[in-house]
Amino acid sequence: MRHDICHPEAPHKKLRIPEWYVSSLMMDRALDAVVRRVKKFNRKHDIPYLAGYSQDGKTIYIDRHMPKYFSWRGRKIDTDRFLILHEEVEKTLIDQLNLHYLHAHQIATRAEEAAVRAAGIKWRDYDRFMQKYVKRIGDERLKKVPADLDLKPYRDEHDLDLLRRMQHCVDKGDIPKSVNPTRVRRAVEKALAAVRARRRERKKAPSRAKKGKRKVKSPR
Image (cartoon, rainbow, N blue to C red; front, side):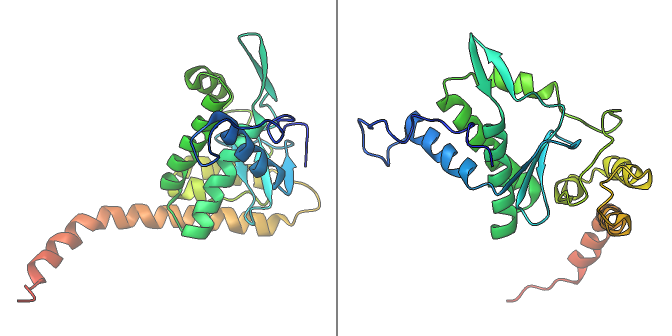
């Protein structure tokens, strides 16, 4: 794990207010604590939506084309630490509280925004810079996807086209030689099947609701 992305002064500076108050310095310390706990960090793959995590949560992936820094008002801003915070919070909420991806993503984005603002950076400028590097469906740069990437975000988003594109990467052999392609293909196919099943359920939902309404009786 890289240690140079942690703030070198935050743990040593004395706070002038109680530590449980909301403060930029305490937020910076919290961010450092999260970053230090990341076991593996990988920047060698193409990651849809810019960043992601492995199925076991031990590896944080950041897209290989994402710059490590961006210049803002004469400052060199490290973007990795904010992305790591987002992915760690999101994965923890999904695994530990069984939250839907979209709900976990909203909370993680708020945490990321708070950390960015605590660093004295305007969220609008930061977000505009990040959006330039987001890879979506149809993006020709989406070629090298990690074999153990957690697909839940794409399943919950019902992003069928993106999952198909990821399956195409596997079929072409764009995965490490040490990885069993059959295992990866099955994982993607399972995700595709889950999205298709949910779409079918949504189409049937209105008719089922009407039938159920006629049969329901008052408990009184």
